[in-house]
Image (cartoon, rainbow, N blue to C red; front, side, top):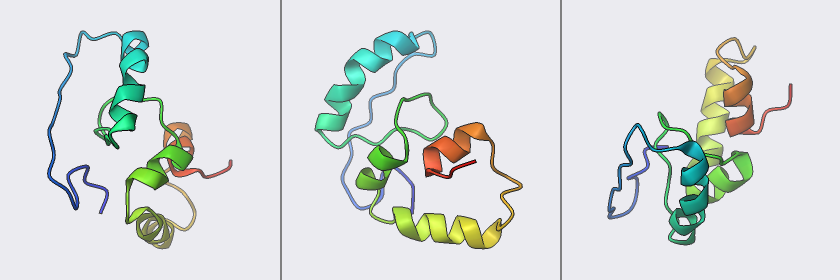
Length: 87
């Protein structure tokens, strides 16, 4: 399960849509220090290595994704980066 609330009590901090991504990158390390998980619909700088350590079911998800889309038709450059899939 890749829901960011999975398996834990959470505190959710939402940043304004006007919040600058460059400024977000300055505070992102604070979120990571406390094992914060990004919202999948929001910008962040994490890749597969960082995300896999935050989500206990990461490998289960990747296996299911591969099973459901073996040819990678639903992947784009961004998703390949997030999931650690080489082009």
